[in-house]
Amino acid sequence: MCGALQSRCLGLLRSDYLLDVCNSTSVKQVEMNTIASSFGGLTSSAPTHRFVFQQLGMLDKLNMLPENKALQGLTTGIIKAWEIFNEKDSVILVIIENQPMNICDQRFHQFEIACQKPEVKVIVKTLTQMSNEAKLSDSKDLLVQGKKVAVVYYRAGYSPNHYFGEAEWSARLMIERSTAIKCPNIQYHLAGTKKVQQALATPGTLERFVKDAQKVVEIRKVFTGLYSLDLDENGDKAVKMALDAPDRFVLKPQREGGGNNLYGEDIRKKLMSCMKNKERSAWILMDKINPPVQQNYLIRPNQDYEKNSALCEVVSEMGIFGIILCDGDEILINKQVGHMMRTKLTSCNEGGVHAGDGVLDSPFLIDD
Image (cartoon, rainbow, N blue to C red; front, side):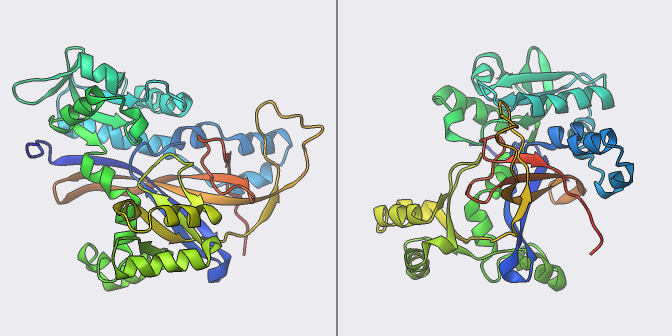
């Protein structure tokens, strides 16, 4: 592959956290999402709990629900990237799945772009459509429907099943080779993988990227135990830890989208099956975070509320949205823009809302 033609890159990120009661109720990072970071639209455009308080006349409680402008902030990042591309007739391209399951959340971004910057055209395509319809100009501009693309926002492309064959991979490569600003580019995409998360937790690695020693200390406080499973002495030690006490850990592959992690006895089975082959290196081992248990109601479609309205034991996870826009080593924008909370049953290992394991929720602030 030729070198990158676009030095500017955009990240719409979501960093997920759980409280850990085993560490004096400290906050621990679950993961960093760098591609298709979802639910910024739904969490800030459908303020269900605020509406409920209003209907119940509990207006004094509204200030306990923190303001959430995730959608507006994320969309601002896309528009700022379009502006620095500096081609007034250029378009924003959104890449979606062939059968999009999260279309409502994706559409909110398109609607918000229309509100903030009505003169900007948004084109929505799948990777399959891109392989048939898009092309690169002689100057490596990405052309779709005769329009030059300024920004490519990926809401697909993070899972192997989004690539049906060579056509979709070729489309991804074509986009990477273009002058369009990618959200994310391949470097940002790979930076969100579990292996990079594990590598950043190794002693001395974080210091390569953060020079302020005090900031390094503060960042490390949110890391939980992360262990390599490479075929070496350290990997063997991590395997032994997991086999001896699988309930203490989570086994994570290089996958996104929820439903891919392994727990408990499934960890033992997987590690025993790849004990001496290189597949083991494709996984990482992570300390299992133990969040505080609360009681709440989970509201789902087609639920019989007369029969199923009992309080459930649940845990909640908080995601913090941020945008980063860079030109090479120069950081143009780097800020937090909103949040997402999701809640799940304590009996459920996975927590993805899109995967059907969790529900969207709202933080309720109280004085400590």
